[in-house]
Structures are given as C-alpha cells and as structure tokens.
Image (cartoon, rainbow, N blue to C red):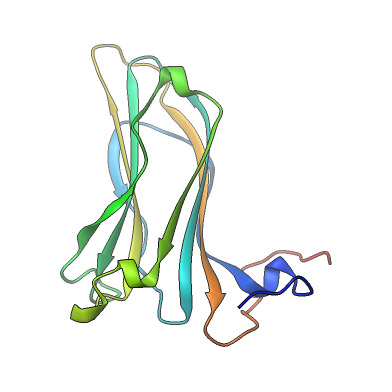
Length: 151
C-alpha cells in the first residue's frame, strides 16, 4: 500500500505509452501487458483536438496471454464517446485487477482506440495516453520506462 513518503514513481509504472500524435479513422489496439505484478491499472488519456465529425471511443480489453488469446472487453472500462465538442479533454480509466476475469486466468490488458469519421473527413484526433501499473505487489517498481525521475 502506498504511503505518503513513497515517490509516485515507486508505485506507478508506465507499462504502455502512446506519445502525442494525429490519428485518423481506425481501430487500434496496444500491445498486451501483464497485470501480474500490480493491484491496479490506470489509463491517462490526454485528448487535444478532435476533427469535425470524428468520434473517439477508448476502452480496455483483457486476455489470457501476451498474444491476446481469448481477448475480450472489460465491462465498465470504457470512456463516454468523445466528439469534436470535446476538444482538450483529460480522462482516466481506473482498473482493479479483481475486476478482470481472474477466475479464468485473464491477466493481460490492452488499450483499444476506436476513431471514426462521419460524412466529413476532418483532420483526425490528436491525443496521447499512458497506461500505468499501480500499487505493485512487490515494491518498488522498476524505473526503466522513465526517461528521468526528479524527486
């Protein structure tokens, strides 16, 4: 359990990151990452501009293996659909590992982005996101995915 004297970088580890980019109409899924060493996951989504007539859906999926075997959507782990009226949004999805299908050994998580456009072909969707493993089962977490930690 996290305490006030711990650094955030000791209890939160970036497992997946998508740096700021312009995305067109597509459904994309991240790599699958294991939640075996964490009690929680946290997706931080930073949405810039959303092109005219575009929609954005983001949700979490779970699987049995790093290859995505048995992949399925985790119920209740999806954002409310965003449109061009939702520019400059900050959104997070919180996941407790017990919300996964642990009784059937689902241990891997992926982030899915579903970007679509309607009648008009606008510029797309600018966004960035990171998915963190939170509350490690054995502290502290590794530091290899951080470029720099200033404490």
